[in-house]
Image (tube, one colour):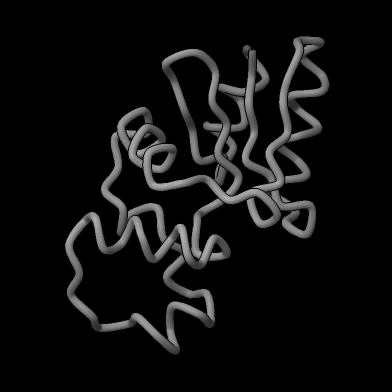
Amino acid sequence: MIKIYHNARCGKSRCALQEIEGTGQQFEVVQYLKTPPDAADLRHLLKLLGKTPLELIRQRESVFLENFKGKTCSDEEWINIMVENPILIERPIVVEGNKAWVVRDAESLAAIAAL
């Protein structure tokens, strides 16, 4: 089953959800701002994405700029920061089996459409 970590206020997230709906497959929508992933979930997502925690953080978000810009943290500290501030998690994240994408461009959107 496809899972999307979704923020309805985000145009790219809405677009990805629309693509998923168009596949005709079953899917689960996780409103990650209402039900944020825990540290274990984030570690799993990072592994599937092949990214470091800092690569998954929205570094232009005001919460980041005001509280964390210029700070050096360990991977675990960044993960805990995302757990405490889910608005910092890049979006949308789509998971299907053992693959995951941060759907921010046409290429990753095309991968979703091909599911």
